[in-house]
Image (cartoon, rainbow, N blue to C red):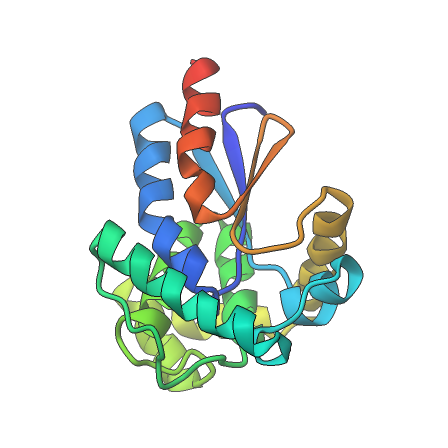
Length: 201
């Protein structure tokens, strides 16, 4: 299906947060679907593709990351805390809930955006079950059901499988958007993604 963007992201990723709203606006504008993939970067994708979590990067790379975050925060003009209190959070349960919502066909994209906003704008801990229940409720989702589903072997295997599939598809960073077989890495490639989508209309 060409009119579908596969959206690979991490709830811990500031770049995913910065791009999320613009991605959903793009999709609405052109009538394109979004399929979310909250894959495992730290435990699966980074080790296989040469990536490093922020804390293991050189001081120079860590310092420049903060410079870029500030530049993009100003450019995009969204609420954004460069050094949030609850980061990086254990995202396993949150990611499982996103998958559970997606598989049930109920609000996965909106829930994903709310998780990102919780980390980067609202100083909320997405590793905390009560916080996740509250965020789900704010998205008109049944948080208890999502948590139950997220903790099943089925969802655990689904996330692991999609993380391996992401590597096979060329994914190495977050966010990554795949449209029509073409990969776009980073929220700063959304203009190029839009050109691809527009050219297919």
